[in-house]
Image: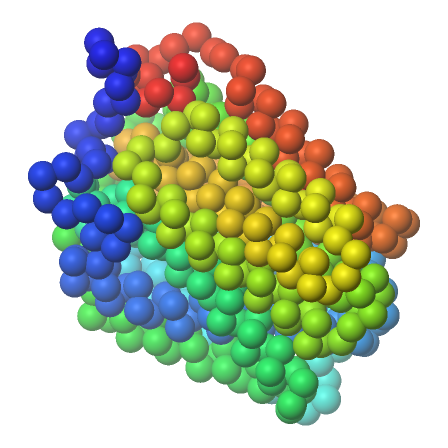
Length: 423
């Protein structure tokens, strides 16, 4: 911090003052605009398929615990090998890497479409496709996170990270809403077809994108151990990673909770499930957009967002009906994705370009790589105590994460001059 106690940011991530302001300033970059448009289509298809898979598996098995296990297996590759994907992203041309991973995703979605259309979309087949997709995500997830910083000037990085979150969270609105309409009218099979086609949009966008920044070769070691050492010594990195590890494990398991909440607790159908998912997603878009107005994330923002997330989950746990649950999930979505976007922005802004791929791989690992354990554990909790019990567990995890961020301090690193997270 400077002598007046204000946050001072590194030169590569300084917030815009004299130039553009606002959440959408990154869209002034043509490469980012193209990438943004392709991601909107592809991400919407991904969440459409995820919603359809959740409903299809529940209808095939009538078992929340099985649903949790099916969703969990896709995260096993990231759980085992996720951090090494960042080392790959730090060494290979990101655009070419993303072209390859998106093409592989399209093949997986197309295969699921064919199996569903032919009546062979069994649980083992879905599991196998989820595992293959999980292997692809090892390289894809950190590459997508790191690629954003190569598409905008340094002053616009915070806006780009926020809008990248809006892409995902906007897809959480569009995808489940479209899935609900398709499930009710024509079934789950067309959902898989739409997702397969949606990958063409991002592939075409990547073919025409030319990054404005060149990635740097890894410095100080190219492996995962070097990245762990780098993050461990910087509070502005390990604090959001630790918070997300706890929250991601126990609180971000809506794909397991919401189908059962809609079906058994609220006594609804596919339309109710889609409605709950859509309300959560609308809140998530609002949360991501709100973070785009923040010039620089601070510790107190992380604490407030984690606390609000916990309160939102607790409120959903006591919601008496569908209308009340929609309201509480809307608020939960705002808080949850304020928290997620703040954490991601902090990591992007305060990691060296030479380490950014590996740091974001660690982020993906604690956010998504914990899915196998979290989904399986949540499925067991839902089977034993119902979806409300799982929501209470998630609320407790959020509050503990907020307490950790508010109370824990470590000796300062020289890079603490770039952040006020340590104070």
